[in-house]
Length: 622
Image 1 (cartoon, rainbow, N blue to C red):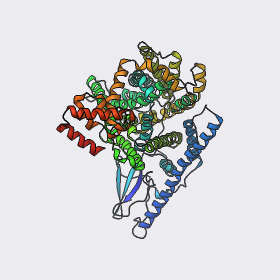
Image 2 (cartoon, rainbow, N blue to C red):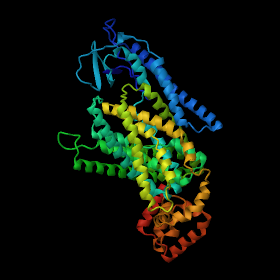
Image 3 (cartoon, rainbow, N blue to C red):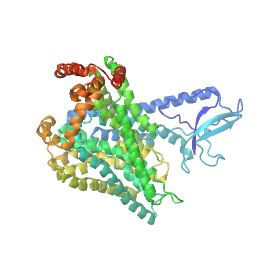
Image 4 (cartoon, rainbow, N blue to C red):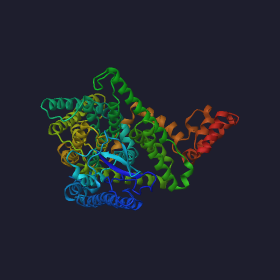
């Protein structure tokens, strides 16, 4: 076991930065002076040295991002499409990982390291009594047998390994929120049925296909003696869930640059946005699968139904929480764009944390919060805040995404517990591609039975090819690496991400040409050509009318006032619920004010108590 001294109880607190853990080798000073107890001067020196090292390691990541940005600028001038910025960030991370692992060795000083102790088990916190003074040590992980002399090198590698919660609470929220906030809603909702089918049904199909194939490979590995630990069917399903999360950021960037057919772009983007949310809830449901009895890994129908209930409950709760927080606005800040942007940012981020604190899934909540805010809240922002919020989340998304991909490359060499099994790796690649095929082709066939605009075979082949794995798959796999099975999943997942980003992402342009996918499509002209045809479908038309006539006037300052859309008998209620800014639009001003006045005459200018309460609340909010 490796323990790190955290603080001296009752002494001066540590100065280590909060961003990186305060990781130091266990120190023990021999009997001298005051009986061997560590004085405050030594504590200060250790804290200062740790602070200096942590700053240097953070500087490495900053330099990685800087180098990535400069290379991206060069690639944009050279029009080099065979390697995306994320793949480039991974290469730079790999190079730094190689240098840290094999090129730099910390001085080996074993005088401060104890290689044995009489503690049974692995306590999370260890209090050590040194001459009557207690020191607290925190468990950092297991030190491999025979590697006691490598403690200093392992400590250096641990310092560049972040806590997985950093990814979930700091880096993932801006990526997921930006996906929802930048969503091209017209293309998305025009293909909403197909997107939901691929994201929900397709992800579940992919999860179970991958899980079943991997269970077959794992069973074979047990027979031939190639499995070094426990690996159950639930572990196979969990692996299927985490690698079913697609992240075709490389492909979508090329699609956007080449102006590929908007429907193909919408299908891929929409699926990737939603299936990240589905994958994380699905993985949580699989973890929640607990059959009754002694065998906790046997199949039981009631436990399966309970897991399905957990899936529905967590997803629907996260969805509702995200939508509700997305429509919360305070429009008095319109005159102060800086404050308005800051509040918008904090409300968006707090949605993720609130969902996690309530036991829901923050990824789902922040995704639908972003979609809702783009559709409603965006219209309530001042013009300055509209520009600032878009640029802010675009910047955060860019930095967080490239940071994660750089860290992926570095982790291949800095992670201490890799388990690479050739049979498992081969099985994983086979399962991933078969799972993707089982998702795309059967569902496309069924969807084409009801679609007027068919999903052609060339589109299906590109969607199959573009099923890259990325940030979400990595974050889910690194969150728990305590067991042999999870360590093998994480190591294999890294290889899958590397392969799909470099090979599939790099081959996107030749694939588009080979499949004769139309490029250079003007999305505005495409909308004008096909909007009438698609929006004539009755579900879309009903939703569009309801949203335009009732929801937008209620939740935003845009659209026709409710006094123009609600019946005359609802005049008092409509006036209370309509924002005063809605009347500022010229085409509604005369009609609405006249309508309000005539409505007041017809009803004797009386206002109900309910309308009065709503009016007061509206004034307080607006």
